[in-house]
Length: 214
Image 1: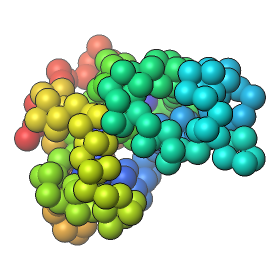
Image 2: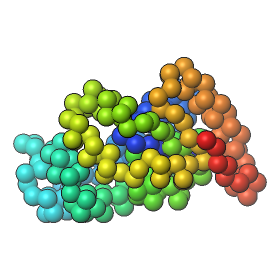
Image 3: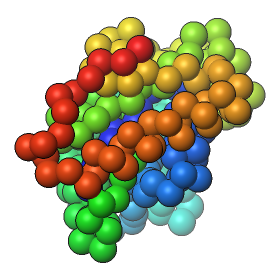
């Protein structure tokens, strides 16, 4: 089994890359889905969020109002840190559980862990490989406004709530340009997937050292 962390900035193209790996046959675990699972009403993380941020971050059905919570924390670094401290450890445990379950059924699997905050949560430390998907900030802003309906201020707030892409690049074994046409990205992903398949069948002691590709 080979566990590959996939990260990038807001609207950098990370989700597209994850989908291309899935097309190739990789198993994809999405951190955002795990985060939604661990904060369902009644769970410990949900209770801690309500206690910390108040009931105004809840919708009528008692589920989290993610938009309201995002507006609150992305303008306040301390609040964002508090939220991350509640959510990240529980997401990490669920990621490990799902990874182990896949590995038991498919010992030679390539597993892609799609996580915007992979490095911020220090989850990159438990990955075999790390891919960072990049895009310049004007493209990020344009995509975020079109895709998510964010204002420029809101999009900038979310970008600034993450590590700068130039910092994330330092942790990358592979860097993909998320502004490339999908056909070119697909070709690069297929090449990487074949490389990962070859590594996945090897015992860890026999795998090559972590490369630094750009």
